[in-house]
Amino acid sequence: MTQILLFIGVLILSYLIGSIPFGLIVVHLKTGKDIRQIESGRTGGTNAMRAAGFPAGVVTGALDILKGACAVWLARWLIPGNAWLEIVAPLLAILGHNYSIFLAEYDEKSGLRLRGGAGGAPAIGGVAGLWLPSIYILVPTLLIVLFGIGYASVATMSVGLVATVIFLYRYLTGVSPWQYVLYGVISEIILMWALRPNIRRLLDGTERVVGWRARCKKTKTRYVKPKSAPDHSSSSTSSSS
Image 1 (cartoon, rainbow, N blue to C red):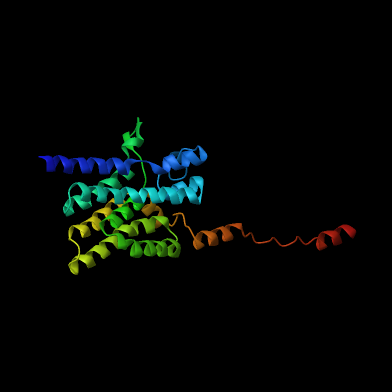
Image 2 (image 1 turned 180 degrees about the vertical axis):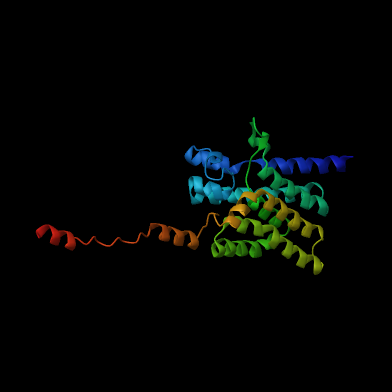
């Protein structure tokens, strides 16, 4: 009975940890603005960066990563050796981040709505909590995707995919349980569900770009082809005749 109560308690705490809207807090402290009213309205690091600058985005992202990692550490601390709890806890932290109980809103048209982020940072935290050295593979890969392809949404969606590859290799070599592979698969599904609007914009070719692609786009937008000077020779000739 005690074990069951501990299991349920870890799941509830993991969701509540994930629900803490660090982006809302950081942006409000720095600018006094409500991040939900800015750009995408999400509370993650990317939107915090748009709302309050690079430092705010980094702080928000780091705190959101800790959500997923803390969920794993909490599970291992209270119920050691339970691989199922170790993957379900960070998954609930991701769900809490995306659908925060602290950001509940009521709309007459859609009813109760839970707002939040897209889940990329807590998903990274979950991977790090399960196997810390994965950060040395995951983070460089995501940076290459982010600045190489130029889409933050694609980098976010890569988290679950890269995690699946990492843990599949570790399972096949006998150093981690197969449930960790399941974490990568389910987290990828959650991320893709949260990023449905971004996927539609990617297909339409209207998704926001970052990095060198954003600079190239700005350069093209700012460039205006100079107009050729009007030829007044014919008018001046006719007027003088």
